Amino acid sequence: MVDIVIIGSRKIRHRTGCCGSRSQEEVIIGYIATLYRTFGRRNLRCRYVDIDDPQAQEYPHVVDAVRNKKIGLPVAVRGQEIIFHGQGSLHQLPDYIREAIRNEAQPAP
Image (cartoon, rainbow, N blue to C red; front, top):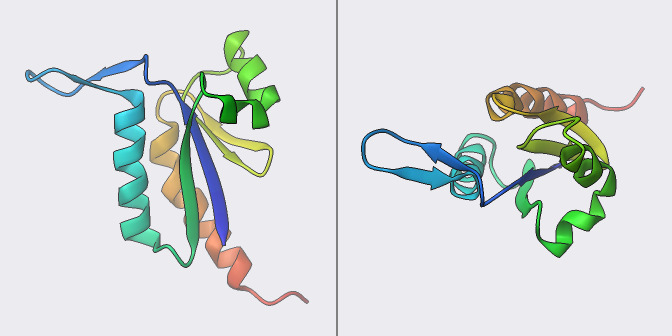
C-alpha cells in the first residue's frame, strides 16, 4: 500500500472562477477523493494535514522548510520523504502513485 500525506494550509485560497474561492484544504480533500476513485483504497492511503495543526509536527523538516520559505505548499510526503512541493505538485502525484503501486506489486528478487 502506498501511504501519502499532503500538507497544506486552510489559510491559502484558490480562485475557482467567478463564484469565489476555495481553501487549499478544500482543494486537497477533493483531490484525495479523486485519487481514491483512481487508485482505490486497497492500493492507496492518503490524508490531508494542515501545516498549522499539531499533526504537522510529525513532519518537522517539512514545517521548517515551509516556514523558512525553502519549499512551498502543498507538500506531498511519503514516509518522511518529500515527494513533491509547491504549485502543480498535485498534478504530478498520480504518476508517482501509479509507479509506486506498480513497484510494490512486483515480487522481490
